[in-house]
Image (tube, rainbow, N blue to C red; front, side, top):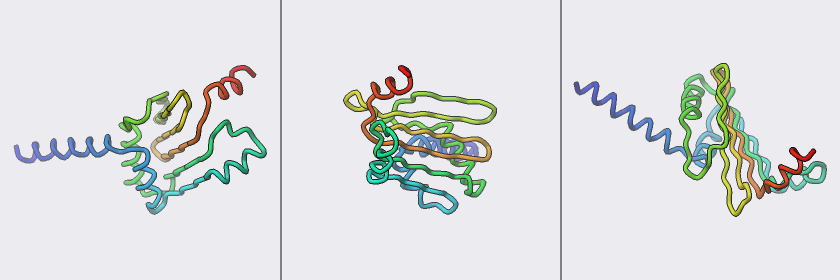
Length: 147
């Protein structure tokens, strides 16, 4: 009986730990892990990119690629993506297809999109992409819907 209760308590604590993950905590924690490729383009890089393309208010890009991690880290991340819930973000879209799971989250303020986070996972690859800035929905509509 003790083993069953201990197992249930461990599962409960693990689910709390997974659900307590925030986008900032994930980027801070996993960017330093062995096998994780972290690419960050800040305001200066995006300003330079803005000379050639319309960045639509995006002033930062953060990418974490977990494809070179150990299988145990990939499995942990895959579980995290499936159950990820950050209260600061709204779930915009979830796609599940042939073992691939994609979540798109957004954070808005004053009618502008401040962050978009894309989490994607399948049995072999896990990645996270975060776009930050002051992205106007009207610019997106003008660029992609009106054209």
